[in-house]
Amino acid sequence: MNPDQHRLGLQNYFLSRRGFLSKCGMGMGGLALAQLMNEMNLLSASPASAADVTSLNPLAVKGSQFPGKAKRVIHLFMNGGPSHVDTFDPKPLLEKYAGKPLPTGNLATERKTGAAFPSPFKFKKCGQSGIEVSEIFPKLGQCIDDICVIRSTHADVPNHEPSLLLMNCGEARLVRPSMGSWITYGLGSENQNLPGFIVMCPGGYPIQESQNWQAGFLPGVYQGTYIDTQHTDLEKLISYIRNTTESQAEQRKQLDLLLALNEQHIQTRQQDPQLEARIQSFELAYRMQMDAADAFDITREPKHILDLYGPGTQARQILIARRLLERGVRFVQVWTGAGQPWDNHDDLKDNHARLAHDCDQAIAALLIDLKQRGMLDDTLVIWGGEFGRTPTVELPTPGSNAGHLNGRDHNHYGFTTWLAGGGAKGGYVHGSTDDFGFKAAENPVHIHDLHATILKLLGFDHEKFTYRYAGRDFRLTDVYGQVVSDIIA
Image (cartoon, rainbow, N blue to C red; front, side, top):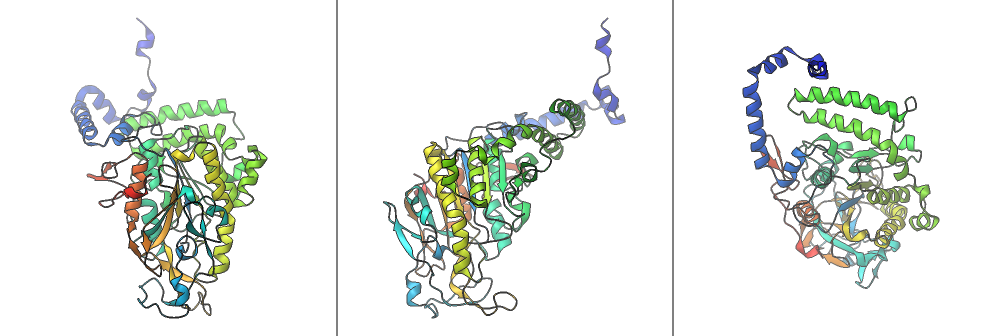
């Protein structure tokens, strides 16, 4: 007789009374039912979710529902709401009515607005396409033939919080997974030593904080990993990235023991998703010690690349974003900064010029760099904020812009976003706002339509890309959304 045949296993040391009875046969009915329900769930799940259930590694590379043109995404988020009539949507008729009421009247926004407010910036036709771009984006204007400008985007309300969640999560009020979480859930990640979804925002969290990159009811491993890119030191960029007391070999032994205990624990709790996410986070944290230092160290780039992107925090984080995409990270979101920097209710001329100057060279460099590396064709670049701004001047309010008549209020009725690469039609303008830039007029594109189109470029039918939760199949676009085929190359 081999004594090892009767050696106690790790699970025997943690055997509960219920577990003991189950081992005696009384739990067989429950086991059979659980297996049956699991098979039924797999049959009813979408192809992506079925693959996720059966995969031992939730971040493993997965196939899309059909061949997509884009494989990875970088979302350049101009939080606060950049003014479309000062960036990519020129409205010369505002000059005619400068200081006068609009003949069409003003739409209701968060605050009261007054007379027409023409842009303080000049526009110039750029590229072979001749698309007009504001003078505050001179470098980006040189790349306009690679950009698809959507001038008819619209949202639901003129408030930051719901509009941020609508743009990022497809739902303005309820807890829903973010777009980055959905895409990482659907495609996995090509680098198992880094998170599949990374968010960079210098100086702290933006408005709505981590809700903007939440996993919602998806497994927690798909939530965005936040990096404060105001720091350059790796230990400040990523807290506790290095263990200063134990070698990697010792850490591996500790992690193996923890993994064994957690796996035993999870078997008695019907694959608790929160516990599964915790296990994955421990593993990922260990693996990141090897790759994170390399990915975030831009000093390893040659001088001509550093010169291409230019100086400053925005240049650094956009260059890091390219390095992350190059290493297989699926979705990278780059925020302008904490709070809502583009929210210029007053002093718009100075603030918009400064913000554009901080990122213009780096965004143009990103497009050039991706193109030179052969990555632009399958990398989707998204630019925009949660809404635009009014073509009328915001009237003074006590304690805010009192005494100033040089800013614009929030405008969700019509604004500009743009896409580049990843199958988007470059050198093309889709839709338009009215003559004054107040409301989407021609070919309006709701945020749900934008999300449906983004998923299409990545190889997903937004109506069939679902996740079952609480007895319902949820999707990024809820029960709305139409693919905008005209912007697909």
